Amino acid sequence: MKFEDILLEINGFGRFQKLLLSLSILGRFTLPCHFMLTNFIAAVPSHHCDISGFDTEGIFENLTGEQRLIVSIPAEADGTPSSCLMYSEPQFHLLFNSSNATDLPAERCRNGWVYDNSTFKSTLASEWDLVCEKKGLNKATTTIFFIGVMFGAVTFGILSDRYGRKTMLLVSYISAMGFALISSFSNSYTMFAVLRFLTGFSITGIIIISPVLNLEWVDIGSRKLVGVVDSLSWTYGGVIFPLIAYGVRDWRWLTLAVTFPLIPAIISWRWFPESARWLIANGQLKKAQYYLQKGSMMNQGKVTSSTNAESLALIVVTEKGSRKYSYLDLMRTPKMRKLAMLTGITWFGVASTAYGIGFNITGFGVNVYLTQFIYAAVELPAKLSVYYLLEKFGRRKTQAGFLLLTGVCLGINIFISKDQRVVRTVVAVLAKGFSSVSFCTMILYTSELYPTVLRQNGLGYSSFMGRLGVAAAPLILLLEDVWTSLSQIVLCSIAISSSLFASFLTETSGMCLPETIEDIEGKSRGTYCRTFQERPEDIAVTSGKCFLDVLGT
Image 1 (tube, rainbow, N blue to C red):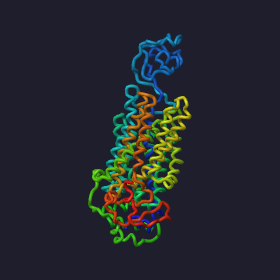
Image 2: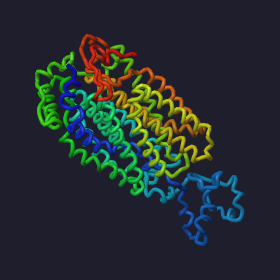
Image 3: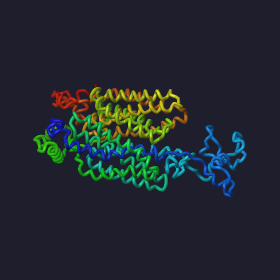
Image 4: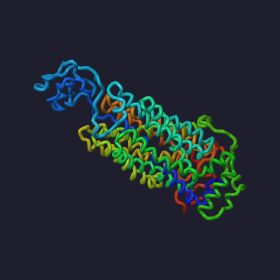
């Protein structure tokens, strides 16, 4: 007997599952806001050296603001004032012949900087002067956050497989909100960086637990819909975030604004069920029976016979519930090693290209708020199309194909002149849309590939590889300082190569979720199970036609 049989009897996508999906959206709303937060709080406004020290005796009294800059600040090649240099003393002769400015003595800024506050009232750069010699610290802010996310994925993957999905989800909610709120009151960059790391570490639990919890409670025919809706919660947050950022221009208040949605998420946690799959896999049949009966009552108004203890004991979980699993189990057996390698590389490719595009909101010459909004808005039709694409082409072709299309768009932009801002932006938006399809598919796909006893470990490891890609994305963008097109070439190469690896993954469309490592390795071939088509009316009962029979194909 398979768990899917019980879900069919209690209604695998009824009021119970819809309530769970709705509750998970509350917590996921804040995720895209925090992931893209540094696009705004770490923005570097236009700036120049503070020249007020030259005016101690009122020598600038009769000069306009522009004239003061001419005599005090060297000009760049494009005519704008230098951001990091100032003259040793005022050069008044430049008022009459500004072209004669070569070889004039210049030095680093003495008294700090003056920032243009027309776009941002306050950012990390303007708060702690993270410019010029310290600009590396400002650029590191994004990487620090995603290193936290990376290690959080590993940690929460282990803990949620050991202590349960529901418990660790609450830990993630509370710790993420706490660290984020405290970070907004930081009095030094070091304090902020440490708290930002901890915020990223904590918030990862929401990322990897809520999709798995939803997936483990729905029947096969509804997995695709749930995966898309769950991913759309990210898109809604991404669309609203630039509107919030546009209205809140101070980095401290913006951090607070995008963190407060976790409060209703914490309140709603009490209504979350534990994963019955996880409970059964860990030998906790009484608790599993409680949640299954609760779901049956909510969906059908009665308790079905399949939720009694005798039926649950017949569910095919061949390994002992007392056994504790770890990341080492991903490497112990041949097919698990292959699966881990392929999903890890694919996640790295999907994440690094998606965020390489997302972080480059100033690289196309369009308003940063508008660019961020467009990038988020394009995800809506892209992710809605995933439902059709998965039904028409399946998981593997959708995953590999749209990664390839992302790489093609990145490659096209290499050959488009930077003066053609609109064209470059259009191509980048297409790439963002294709990468969104790939990302949406990957989360659902990975959850289906790993067995229940290792699902959170598998998703945690894959998420770790993905966040490694995200942490690398801002560093890849720095390659533009070496050669203008180098960063795009690297991202294009990553997308195309990871598309190739994704093509070797197993198709999971319409297959039972694997429960144990034995299912993956094909050692349970004598077990009877059902394979369901994507449509509820296309239920085919077969013997041996299950996940384990197509693994490796």
